Image (tube, rainbow, N blue to C red; front, top):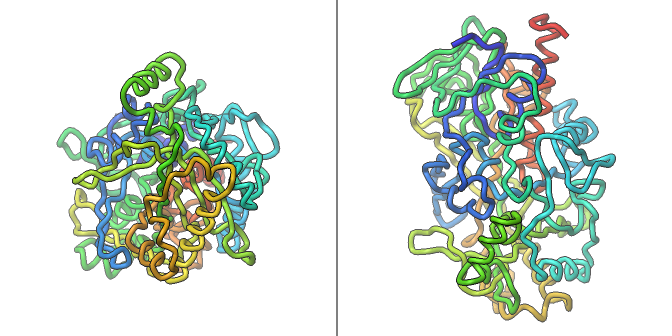
Length: 540
């Protein structure tokens, strides 16, 4: 194989964006992805998300350590086992976060990642169905569309949120990132627009990255303090690939720290305990793990919902609508409307995401999601800035062993209290005149559960991770001992190595994290190219 300029490890949200933009910049790029192709109907048809998540063909299905704050439950965290990564199996809700989040990153040492600095990249990456303005972009690789699974009860819920005193935002990804609006989705023409589709499959000319699929990277080769290539496993054979200018690691918030540690980069004591030679002692590798957490309110309703449309003649009609017009229930995202709100007036940004869906799930005997048989709705109360920080470590020196993921979702009593406050806000919306006539009853947690102590117990029992892991190779100042990469995404202490994925986020942004992960890859490509030009590795 010809020696590329850059190897990108991981073809997920950040990696696909990074590889595509580096190729746009004239570099020869080899993208190495451990999973399969995303050109599969289960990934492309939005409503089939539940057929790829927790399916080992498409999902790494990482087992988290038992969490005592959730009654000892050991959850499964998904991670995309296919090109496009999380963007090829997520719920497709396109949310950028709040201005405050990025300004806070800069205050914590991620200089050049404040809101004003990231906004041009959010605009550059999207092709927004609402059109371009000072905040939104068109013509980019990621299509951002209006939902095509529309139900009148969603309109009623938005009207009810306004009746409850929540301001109507014309665009939660635009000037006003607080209030209530419809969910925008990462779809083009009613089908999923993953990062792989946007940056790789539907490229607009220029050099294309060379893509290796089902090629699992075992470690990064570091020689004399510089990353020079990778060792990977493909077709049962161990292979090496060398790059002229270096390696970009975009394996995700769970796999990036694992690969760094397998390569000798991480907390020295832990590496030695695993029998791994220390190449670079970075105590922050694997630390600072964060995830959003939340719980659902589920109601039976007297209205048409996706549950109604999933069976019988209505279900057959929905299949026809999708086949003929790419509309209807099969285009559904995981949410249809949402509100970002503050439960406490003194907060600098919303602490809660109240996400509404015109459908609801139950669990079967194996714990798998299944649509409820009756018309139902669900309201997710998600906590945006939980206090707990978890950790990812190695299970052993075996490069094929999954990582140890230790994270306590609800170790903070105040986090629990905030979710309880969110339940009160969500219930208040459902009592408003615009939507109340459709509500037949509250199934979970149940209308009789009003005592704060009972609700706190319910939150502990019923809360779930929202599958937005970030922070395990955080970006910060080079003199910050917990920082893993600097503001140019360069690995502190190793030359020729960059990280560009959700692991570099210092803190969680507001809402779903996929759009931010894509932005990191898109913006990060400019940092890599600028570094190479500065070091006179390439012209420009």
